[in-house]
Image (cartoon, rainbow, N blue to C red):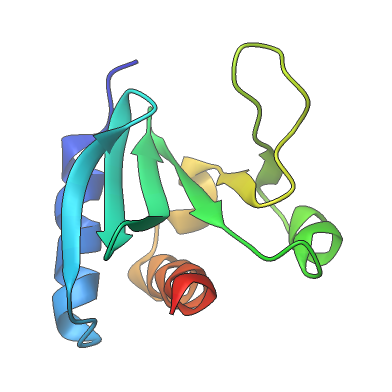
Length: 107
């Protein structure tokens, strides 16, 4: 699946702006992943974003607007990842908040 290169650039800008250190990019699930060490916290996938969450926060996060289950090839949904629709991260403050939250899970 192709991914939104503009969103990748926006996330890279957010990472720099909020001072996240040690972040690198890598291809993940056919998208572009953002990792701290060896652990991905966000993946640009299509025009949306897959973000890491904790199992404890999973149900609460799923109840938020624009958030859906993440599943690969019809498998059971992941209890650590959700998909955030492009509309939910169209503005920089919302994108920044999702990146902060996801990065906190792997820190």
